[in-house]
Length: 392
Ligand code: GLY
Image (tube, rainbow, N blue to C red; front, side, top):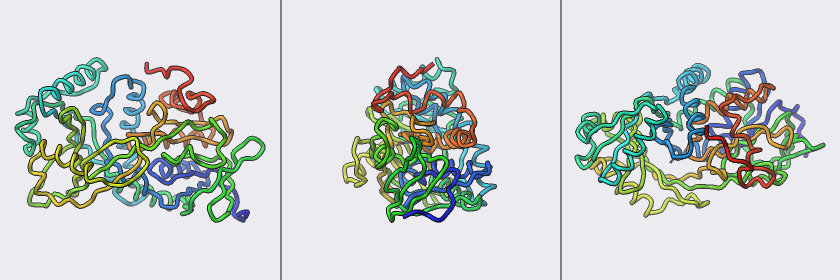
């Protein structure tokens, strides 16, 4: 069934934070944009914690990705201010800093290594004793053996972010189609639009694939155009801090607890997010074991957490590419642009991804910081980097 509506300049498959931000930024450039998603904002963007913590979440071997992460974190204050002005809603951005703490002596050694690595890269982080950690966050257990204060790592309330992006899109004239995509359409060797699950066909000058861990499974996608994107399950909890207990925590707390890592993210409105488990699985069942582990470790760090109401347990699927880094840019199929595979950093990477893809839609070149992360690095098989990604 063909649609009577005129083709959009851009059609975005996936209405998570990234898809909506691309649509909003694209519409702000005067483009006619359509977003297709059966439940915008209810995928990984709803499950996330919203940590904007490139320095405290630094991983070995990911120096190039750090540059992208830092670039996006730097964009956040202006991005959030623009979004608030465009939507009339709070963005949930909170410049609160992050304290990364260690529990036992082994955890402390892990964090000391991280501190040395951050130092070699010239990143701002300060080592604190146990007492200094508790001076910043008095609810921490005296068992905490030390920590790192990263004043430049912040947070955004991912659910407020998505609500504001939806409102900004609607105000900017983005058409939101609440249906599933059945198939990518291509003609003459070019992506031309999509067919929806009710048979309607929507045409577009460009199609942007921002469908998280469903991105590589889209029917109609030629083999190798998008690398394998796998689901990585994460369980996450939400607690509420009663007013009488506030401020319970004043900043993000990341922790190494007996070799595992976790985080607590306190919102300005009293919500406390505790996450997250990580399994190579494709279901969103919240298990008793997952909740137990998160609460057990959180209570070791912050014993007072036992008193707080547990208001939500949730699970989402992070989209992981073969090298766990995002896939942003034009694909081998003309007319199809990738914006997927953001794994653990989808919320952090929303501004830089949106600006780069909106620029591509307007025929601009990709910024240098984004260029290493194009789909072509995986080669024709779409399964592994065809060359070493430059982490320089
Ligand atoms: N970025 C946090 C997580 O993926 O759990």
